[in-house]
Amino acid sequence: MIRPRTLRPSFLQLALGGALLGVTAFAYADQPPTTQTTSPDILLGPLFNDVQSAKLFPDQKTFADAVPKSDPLMILADYRMQHAQSSFDLRHFVEMNFTLPAEGEKYVPPAGQSLREHIDDLWPVLTRTTDKASNKWDSLLPLPKPYVVPGGRFREVYYWDSYFTMLGLAESGHWDKISDMVDNFAYEIDTFGHIPNGNRSYYLSRSQPPFFSLMVELLATHDKDALKKYRPQMEKEYAYWMEGVDGLQPGQANKRVVKLDDGTILNRYWDDRDTPRPESWLDDVNTAKNNPNRPATEIYRDLRSAAASGWDFSSRWMDDPQKLGTIRTTSIVPVDLNALMFKMEKLLARASQEDGDSAGASKYEALAASRQKAIESHLWNEKEGWYADYDLKSKKVRNQLTAAALFPLYVKAAAQDRADKVAAATSSRLLKPGGITTTTVNSGQQWDAPNGWAPLQWVATEGLQNYGQDKVAMDVTWRFLKNVQHTYDREKKLVEKYDVSSTGTGGGGGEYPLQDGFGWSNGVTLKMLDLVCPKEKPCDSVPENQPAANDDAAPAKSAAQ
Image 1: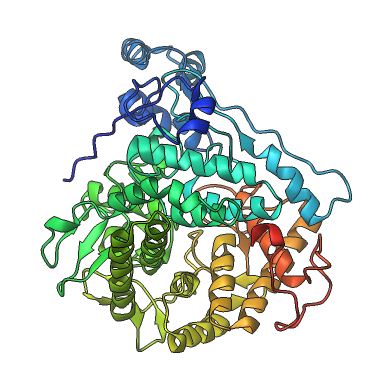
Image 2 (image 1 turned 135 degrees about the vertical axis):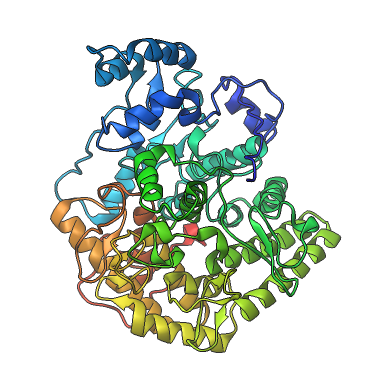
């Protein structure tokens, strides 16, 4: 078993944080901790397990986010003394000893608001400031600057969500919020060595699709020195993903990096822990129980690693799409992750160049060139004509078509002829009345058909545009926007995911009910509104008629250029 990394918590009292951050980016690294970085399942042991097993709350995340009112060791000692008594009431005990997360107020927009007005008004509603924990046992990890959360049950900032949220913030002119969030992520890299899945102690053992360098690239359109400024953190994040690469023999893997038999270096998703996820504890325990032929720790790690991928859960990671227990994320090399690593290498080359380090620039350019070659040789399915994941067990590319196939187009790593084939497969297999579906498989999991997710619509749109596939790109944009507009007209909200098999329905499946808010849907909607309306006549709602792909409608608003 690979042991979890030892984390060096380093939160200081952040009263000075704002002032300090203005002077020098992130000088926090060796300060004494004032917050808890131990996950609540470790902190509370049997009490945590018993509360989650008893299903006291409809959402397992509720207790993971609950804040102990006193020292957890004392609470645990009380529990051990009391819980065997016949009169013991577990719910009462929890309510006496923990502060439960407050129900978020439902935001109701003013009557008659357009889609754009609604989203613009949502940004302050979704903004949080948590520069210090409520007490030192809170699972929430404080961040020095304000940040935008997705909404609903997601009361903290999430890594890859934030990039697509930032695209919307740029469209709304909130560069201050983008700068704050980049600072926060840089702070997390300096503090923990990586950006956790979200700012909770139970998310520290994994990251998510690495979009930090793209966030810095976005900020650089407004602050020309951004790439140079955040180069140290970009390099640290790169080192996190590549940890252990130098010691690998062909056919070996270490955490997030793998070396194929022919010496090719690629990356995979990995979580340092192999226990049930605290926020979905009972689900994971039951998944392991229902699959006694596999070691529970192996199932737990694969479930956690799928959460690191952002695609939790999908047939993409399973041998049997109908059986979650066949999940094996860690033996699959994902095409989207490696496309993002290619982009990180390209941006590190650019940051090095801007910083006057031509040797560094050459190094990262060479790494990007090797990565591109690896994507083309190992993550392309010649028979099917699309990019796909590589299977470490069968040692060949997988057959499944997913929306991840569009990532090499999104980062401009694809050859033109292959991009054309992906466009054709997208149009014939993934494109539905309400946008592109995540996969072609209907498994009941939320990252499968018939669901479509905003980030993947944007990756598809931009990726297709990069290769002159404007018609398919406009089809994706138009269908998804109509879906968002119809849902908004009916329910006065944007949601986390959409059912793309029709138009105007929120998505389903997965471990929890559909969430409102919703950060990344807001961001992508604003970007897409600017694709369907001419720059001189921006629209606040989706127009009645679809523009032709070649209409003068494509440039985004100048603020985001």
